[in-house]
Amino acid sequence: MVSPELLRRYAFFGFLDDAQLKAVAMIFEELAVAPGDVILEPGQPAAALYFLITGSVELSYVIQDELNSSLRQEIYISDINPGEIFGISALIEPYQYTGLMRATSAGRVLKINAAALRALCEVDTRLAYGWMRQTAKAAMERLQATRIQLAAARA
Image (cartoon, rainbow, N blue to C red; front, side, top):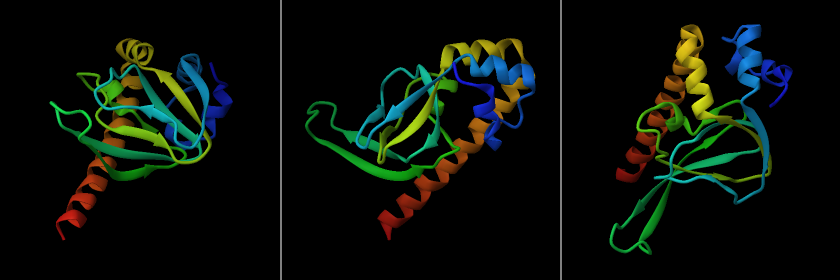
């Protein structure tokens, strides 16, 4: 659990009323990350959503040969900045991470229990709408970053 007051500091959570803020704060856990820490990997079950408080996290896509796992390449896509969510696959079926997230500096993240958040969303449609709106916004930003990387690679 984290303090609802911590969440109030971030515009991301502005759509939550007091009761929702308290309910959501109950399913958050604050974690410290160090440079090089892998926070999530592609192909793993998406059991948590993350919110970056401090530090930096790098999003990369991994291309790996199915027959020879030693043939692996990480392709940088973008940085996650404080005040942004990541691991959004935790809210989108089939609930499996698609990117590699690695801390590039020391920092703090909030880890959000995805099953508990989805359960809250099932009973509170306003909460669900706010989370999905924020998640869609993050997804579109990541898609744009991916397009830029693709265009740069083809240039």
